[in-house]
Image (tube, rainbow, N blue to C red; front, side):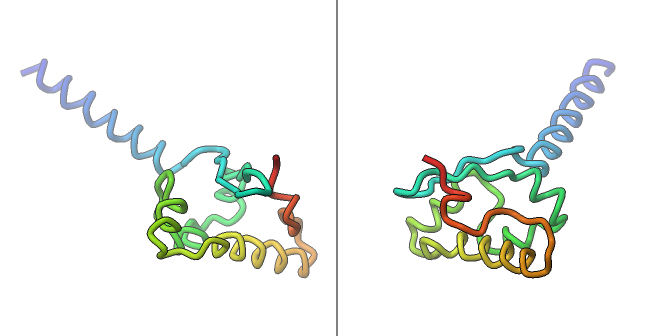
Length: 110
């Protein structure tokens, strides 16, 4: 009986940590950026700043490779995510709020 309780406890703890890791996501994510170069996206910074995952994830699910998958299936336009980022950054800049880059080379790095 004790052995079963320990095994169940370990299983529950592993699920808890797996869920926490999934919810947190990676601190930084590298996205394919085409011929201008990849985008080193500061995911944790956006989570801490925006505090609302749906601002970005309304467009794509919270899973690795989701953007590329949707573009390949033609259910997400190629620059749709980029335009969403630019819109948010430019709106913050217009308000005088510290924000991310608003130019191509600000995000795309070769």
